[in-house]
Structure formats: C-alpha cells, structure tokens
Image (tube, rainbow, N blue to C red; front, side, top):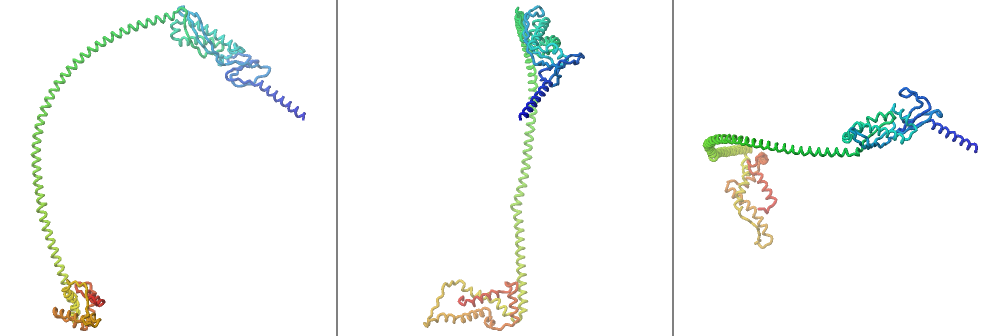
Length: 457
C-alpha cells in the first residue's frame, strides 16, 4: 500500500514537472502587448540580422535557456503638453497648453525602433521622452505662426504640429494618436489688445454699415415712392382709358340689348298669337272628340247593342222553336210507335198537370189541424167513416177530370195495357229528354208517396 502511494506521488511530481516545462516553453502574447523573444539571430524587414524576434498577439514556442521573453505594452499614454514664453512670429511670447495621446507603435518597421529604444523601460520614461519631443516641436511650430493664426485657427495649428512632430515620434518607435490645443494665452496682453482692436474695428464697421444701410434704405424708400407715384399715375391713366372703353362698350351693349328686347317682345307676341291659334285648334279638336265620345260613340254602341240583343232574341226564339219542333217530332214518332196505346201514354203524361191544376184550387188553404168527430155515438166510427169517404172523393176527382177533358181516367186505368204499350212507356220514362216527353216520373213518385202515407190526402 505504501508502495502504491509513493508511485502516485512520483507520477504527480512528474506530471507537474512536465506541465511546468511545457508552460515555460509556450509564449502567449495578448493583443495589447508585444512579446520580444531574444537570444537568437533573426532577419528583420530591412535585411538586418538582429538578435530577437517579435510576436504581436498569439502564441509561439521558445527555446529554453537560449531565448528570453520580454513584453512591451501597447496601451495609450496620455501626455500634457505645455510651453511658456514661446515666441511666435513677430516676437510675441505665448503660453500654450495642449494634450496628446501616444503609444508604442505595432507597425512593422517602426516596432523595431521602439524595441531598440524602450525595451525594459516603464511607461513614465516613454512619456517623458515623448513630452520633451512634442514641446520642442510645439515651440518650433509657434515660431512660424502669428498669435492671431494660433488663436483663431487652432485646428490648423494642431494639424501643423502633428505634421511637424510625426516624423520625430516615428523615429522613436511611437505613434501620435491625438493632439489637441486647449488654451493659448500671452503675458503681455497682446491677444487682449488684438481683441479690443478687432472689437473697435467691428463696432466701427458696424456703425458704418448701419449708416450705409440707413442711407441705402432711405434711397431705396425714395426710389420706391417715386416708382409708386409713377405706377399710380400710370394706373390712373389705364383706369381712365378702361373706363372710357367701358362706357362705350356699355352704350353698345345697351343699344344691342334694347334691340334684342324689342325683338324679344315682337317674338313673344308672335309666339303668343301662334300659341293661341294652336290652342284654339286643339280646343276644336277636343270639342269634336268630346262630341264623338258623348253622343256619337254611345249612339253607335247602343245601336250595336240593340242589334246584338235583337240577334240574340231571334236566335233564342229560333232555337226554342227548333227545340219545340224537335220535341213535337219526337213525341209524334213515339206516339206513332206506341200504336193503340198512345192515348193511354198521353193521358199518363198529362195526368200530373191536371192533378196539379185541380190541387192548385185549394193551394191557398192552410189546414193546421183536422179533428174527426164521431157523430154516431158508437165509438170508433169516426176514422172508419173518413176512410169510407176516400173512394167517393177519388171518384169525384175523376169525374171532375172527365168533365174537364172528356176522358174517363178510371176506365183508362182499368183497361188492360198491351205489352207493346208498356215497353214503349218504359222507354219513354228512361229517355234522355224527360222534360220534353212529360212528367210521368213525377207522377209515379207522387203515387208511391201517397201509397206509403194514406193520411197525406
């Protein structure tokens, strides 16, 4: 067990040693730094052999013992640039304050200058070197510019300073990112005097400009009034001419209007007369139409209606006559076909009419109640007496019929009818014209009803 523990410890130590060795061999460079690996000869861009190589971001492998690794920061370094009593063009001393931002250049060809000059140096040293160079360049630029140019166009002044200092900064292996002039003053009051002079000049120019503007305004106003008066006169002339033309035109229009009005009056009268003539013609035509509608048309319609009624009545009379002739012809033919029994058939057909005529004599008598009184006193003799009177009543009716027509109905009924007469009577009763042949059917019905109800008489 102890042996295994010792082996594990030895393996762990070996792994850590290998990791440390590998870590010491790998060089990792962040993007804001530059790694300078020195110890071996290397060729640079200009063909020179140097004893180092540069790594800008990324990683590489160094040879232990033979190569050494140093890092340089690429971060921005701020610098306050200021000069005092720096003589400008014209021997005017000026005080200038500005700010600049520099950094170690990472461009190929310039980075080598920075490595050779600032490797192993801190940022304060780099800042001091850059500040001294920028202040010297600032004094050199001030000597070429007047105080007015420095104060009035600071952007131009800063750009000139950048152009002047850029070459020197590049030779040091640095880059000038930003350079701004913050303040420009002088200790003798030159800029203030210039300001007062410019102010006075501006005020004088302003007053002169105001006076000139006032004179110009008055002159312009006078010219405007003159143009206005001329324009007004011209306008009055034009208005007068136009008014004259208007009066002439108005007179012409009035004359033309009067002529047109007279013509319109004449045309109106003419149209009125023409309209009255047309109206009278229409009235005559209307009267004629009214006469035709109220007198002639009704008379013609009445005449046509009378003709049609006469034709209708004539046609009805002719049709009734023809129908009666046809009925009489049919009855004659049937009576001839009946032979000896024709008299009996004739009597049977006219018997209902005879009975109706006889019964009509008492049609107006309203019998509400019949009371039969037995005068014999024997009891039950009243009704038999009435029944015994029925044959006598029937004989009396037949006698009346015989007296009226000369035909004995009972003897005719009692006479025995031949088979030919019976068949002819049956065909007559069943024919299609019962109304034309008689009322035998009605008579039969009355007889049957009387047979069923003896009290009906």
